[in-house]
Image (cartoon, rainbow, N blue to C red):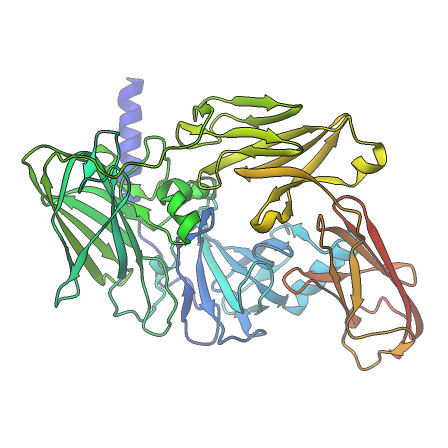
Length: 563
C-alpha cells in the first residue's frame, strides 16, 4: 500500500512539474534600457553554471535598477568577490529575484546596510532583513548598476529563483530577447568509452570532420566505429544585438530517429552546479580552454539538466551496423542547428591509443584514500573524484606532487606537511602554496596545528611550503600628509601583497572605525566622506593591512577637511 501511494505521489509531482506554467507577465524589466545580454542562463563557467542573465549596461555604471515585482528585501550580501554588492527580493508568488554587481543601493537600503556595517565594523556583510523592514513595489528604484565583485565589466546580473532557491531560466518568465540566429557549432568529437572501443582507428578522443550544408546544418563524414562510444559538441549561441558567445538552451540527440539524450537548461540547484565538471571534457578544457559538452552521462552524475537518457547517452556499435546519429541544438527562441553523423559498425585496428597516466596509486571515487611519504600526507575524501582514476603521488623536498590538474575534484583534498624541523619564527611565515607557471606560488587556504601545516584545495597539482616575510604595500591615491580634502568625495588607498595575499584591513579616523569599501579587482580601498565619521578641520587617518601569515603594514597621515 505504501509503495502504491508513493508511486501515485511521484507521478503526480512529475505531471505537475511537466505542466508547470510560468507567470510571464509578473516580472518587469530591471533596467530602463533595452535588454541586451552578455550572458545567458546555465552558461558553462569555471566550476559552475551561470545562474542568471547578464544584462548589458552600455559599458556604464550607475544606471537605475528597479525591483521587477513587488516584495520585500530578504537578503543583502556584500563581498569583494562573487556578486559583489547584491540584493535579493522575495515576492508574494514564492519566487525570489537577485540583482548583482551593483555599484550602490537606493538611499533607504544603503542607509540600512551602512548602519549594520558600522555596527559590526565590517565591509563584507550578509544581512537577512525581516519582512517588515524593506518592502518594495514593482518598478521601485532599489540600486544602481555597477561592476563590483567578480564581474569582468559593467553589467547587471539578474536571477529568478524558485521557493527552494533553485535558479531558473528568466527567459521562461516572458523576457523578450531578439534572437533570430541559429546556434553556432565549433566542433564535434567522438569518444571511445572502453579499452576495446574505437572510432576511425582511435581509442582516444577524435575530432569529427563536418560539412556545412546550404541550410546551415551539418553533415559529418562517415565514421567507422566499434564498441561503446559517446559524442561531444562545442557550441554557443548569439543574440541579434550582441556579439557575445553565450550558452545554448537545449541539446537533444537521436539514434535512428529515437531520442537517447537531452540537456535542458531550464533550472538547476546550486548544490549540483560543480558537477558541470562531469558534463564537460575537463581535461580538454584545462589544456585548450574550450568546453566540449559530453552527450553521454557518467554513471554517478546527478545533474538534473540531463533528461531522457537511454543507456546514459552512450552508443553501442555492432559490426556491420549502420546508425544515423543526430544532434539538435536550440536556443530559447527555437532557432535550431542540426548535426547528422553517419556511423558504420566496423572493427578496425587501433593505431591511436589513450595516453597512459603516470601513476603509482588508484583512487576509487566512492572511497577515501590516504597517501603519505617523507612526513607529508595527502587525504582524498570519499566522493572527491567523479571516476575511479590512477593518480601520481610523489614528494621531493618540501614539495608534494599529487594527480594532474586535468582531473577535476568535487571536494577539497587535504595536504599535510610536518614542520618539526622549522623554528617557531620560520613557521609563522610559512603557508601552503600551489606551484603554477614558472613555479610561481599561489596561496592555498592554510591552517596550522602543532607540528604540522595543512592546506585544503579543490585542485590537483604541485604544492609546497612557501615563505612570506614581506609586509603588504599601502599606497595613497588621492591624498598625502597635510592635504586639504574638502573637494574630494572619497579617500582612496591602494593595497597589495605579493606573497600570501591580503587577509584583512582596518581603517580609522581619529580612532573611530571607518567603512572602507574594497574593490579587489583594482586593489582599491575607498572611504566615502558622506559617512561623516571625520571632523571638520584636522583628522588623523590610520590604516592597518595584514596578510595571510600575519605580516602587517601601518599607514598614518593627517588630512584636513571642511564639512
